[in-house]
Length: 539
Image (cartoon, rainbow, N blue to C red):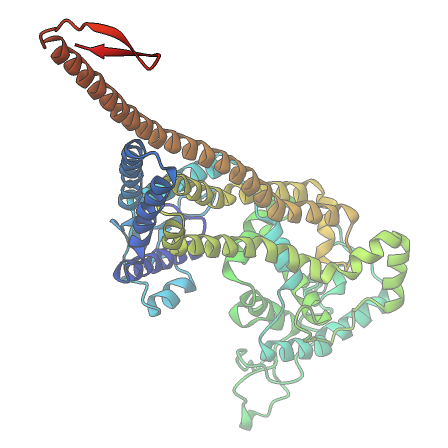
């Protein structure tokens, strides 16, 4: 059975485990029988108040029979647990991939955490009705999501580029040493000579530690006859031809590499160490998505990512730590001058840019968690819904509509995801500014405002519409059930009334027939006057 996220796998299982426990508690305490007692008391009271004698009693009996049939049907279909639900029977498939992972093998931290909590080998039991509702809802949602065209996750790339920073303190210190020994002297030399940059080298190439011009210019800057590390650097072996200042009698364990070696030499170079600070999955996306989108090669995509990583770390975003050393921060005056040139509207957007990128990504990731928690709450509280509704089958249908509506949120968010990334791609020139500038555009903020509204507003609108439709279905079901019971009662009353009337007519006919069978006798009378009063005397 498909789910909308890895978290939903385990929260669905937990919700139905709690359902089983609560159902058993209600059954053991006898609370499940209260609706039946209420049914009998209600109908007996109505019968006594009707003062219609036998007709009301017969109608009440038929209504009780019909109501009992509906209540028992609800208990069998939607109350009593029946089908087993194990973690392996729940799975999640990432959109636009064929990689379907089931509970216990998702490869996420949820596996270890929930297995430790006892959900790894647990199996819940689900009533037939709710099992069918979940299966149908999941199938419809999965098919709808699959119908949406695939797109690259530019929002995630943008979020990572604006929030990831260097975590390793040793690497930060080594970068400071590199900036002091290599970058700052090379940058000063470059500014003093002001040479023309070769074709294909962007104007801002010399403004970061991994400058291709500094690395590839023979005899200058980072290369052999230029600058070296002032101290031994771990990972770089001693080289007698290079490390000539070391005495022969006291050879050190490590050597002092040239700046080009220090930056680009295999696994021990700073470039590779910086790549190690990037999450592997994100690095793969950078290497595959950005080249096709921006028209650059994979190495250039990596360099832009590393440059952004250094900028974020140096500016202290988002955790307040700073990396200083190569002196290329934009001045306060020029920054405010840029704001002035963009106008008052952009001032507000730039002021909140640091929080907007994480906020938009946070909303996208949080809504999935909210959905999983809401479904868990619905599943585990269903026993009380059934009990308090008196096992009404219209409430059973209404809750089925609610479950479908919540599970269908996945499709609505997939639509918002698709629109978000395609709009970002449509305004690509403004988006590229995140690589090197603390800048933004109004179009970016409009996209974020609209998409954030979709992530929150679409589920609200959808759930409201479906709930209204569910209320109509509930009313129709209630009207149908009431009419069925009423018709049965009326039919029973009419049968009883007809039986009494037929019995009365039959008794009348029998009495008349008996009277006719008695022999007739002639009756005569005479009229006399008694005290001037006429009196008829029968003889």
